[in-house]
Length: 423
Ligand SMILES: [Fe+2]
Image (cartoon, rainbow, N blue to C red):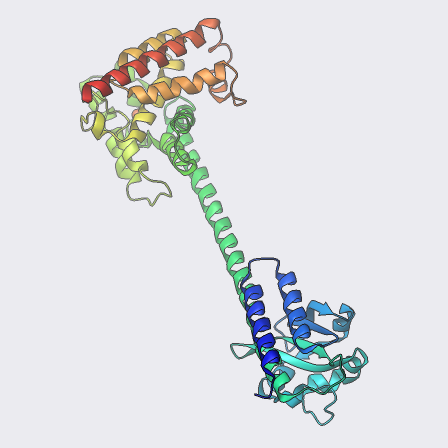
């Protein structure tokens, strides 16, 4: 090396700075601009520019990424052809000199005058993985000296760095774009899945003419309870779907049995009670984007005391999702009119929930639902979803908040007592 030690250190320093700049996560254009500045500073050059090749046709325009000491309009008149790229790939350093009038490089020959008029003396291709990804144009030295062999070595090293930096950045952009496309596709698929599920829910409810909208409401109550229990957004979506589908097994039960549950014998009743297991069989072969949908359908008529069906599971054996849907299901059954009875008063419903917590329902789940209702009653949430689902007037009256507060206190007390007994 003919470079003085000081110049060598300076060049190494510039290369290290360039590496840091390129590896940084800051603004891309700023990165290229700073890199160009470092390159110009290292060799004391007056001006320079970085341009990317765009388009995939035989002739492509050059897109300016950064300029220093010249106007970016220079690129308006420049384009690069496939043959030029081949010439650059096979070219020697001297091929890049603008004043080399014996050059066979088409790009230089076509644009020589324009480049010279802008004070450009060197044109370097940025080659990454055997492809020309862009060009770096450089003006002469401020001192007026000629470029030495060492200068060319330094320029080549820095140009390679900048080229790799630009290439990496573009790859990352593509990856981000693909990821975004995938996310959009995934969201679309989920939306299609949700719409299909809701259509199914509507089909289930149509079969039962007295419980129109039941599956939809169970889905919504389940979602509200899960959210109150602190479930994640994805788990909340999942339990809502499970709520929509909990009675899907009814599709295989005779319509007359579904429509007259108050008037059936033991045989017909056992037919009706097959619907959770049938629901599981329908749902299990489907690949759901959420966990436990089939099991929730299977166990939504289980009870903590083991007197439920189909498997007579007890407290710990019943998945929490099934406990949530079970409560949402019973709550909707109690709070909607049927042809053979009016809906129960809210006071009556609260009494039922208190009596059956620990037997049929999980006290923690009941308490969460009560808290969610109380928040609406007290106006602590903008959301009035439960109030709307229950219809006008149902949650009105001062006694409603008291009923709920007392229920929550009692359930929390029982829960603490049970925990103490366990310890
Ligand atoms: Fe059911």
